[in-house]
Length: 233
Image 1 (cartoon, rainbow, N blue to C red):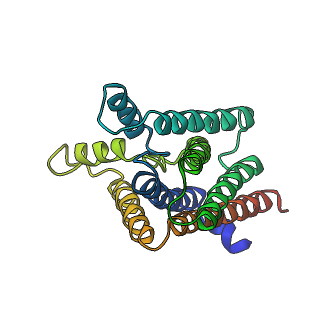
Image 2: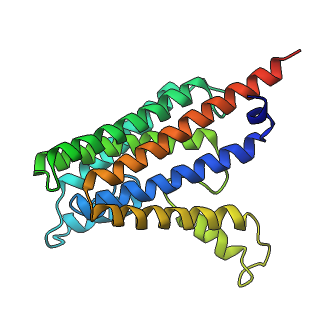
């Protein structure tokens, strides 16, 4: 515990949020490639899919994007309600919320393993909704933890910041390391997720759930260690 307490909170939270960014790549690879071309973390992409479906976008369906959006909003609202009086970046409530995300993702992975490689429409829509809730919860919890330039679910603003501060922009190079890491990790998660899909749909979510669970445990242990060190005589 003493070793954990010596790790600066900013550095610890950055590493944990980057790990969640990798998990997001895994989840969205599964959802887009394996579940009717729907995102459950990247709501910008999901809103665009919904708009194209409303505009008669060929075979695009409305149900998936709508359920993902509803689930995401529900998860985010849950975090807002639970953490509304929280004054710590990582509290015991944060641990419970991220633990819930890990449980949902792992449970859905098990469901996909049990239902086989080609689940029916009802299972697909149920999975989309559940993962939307999980990713909304993760995104909102990460917002309370508030690591600059790392939202865990999207990298549009991150890439914008990289370009602005690059040698082609103003040349300041601020936060280039963390921004670059976030982009690389979400790409890596999507690539690994796509590879795992060739084996089984559930494998991608099981890996994502294990990553989220590890983040939850490490984050909780670090927060406890820091609190214990602060109150030690």
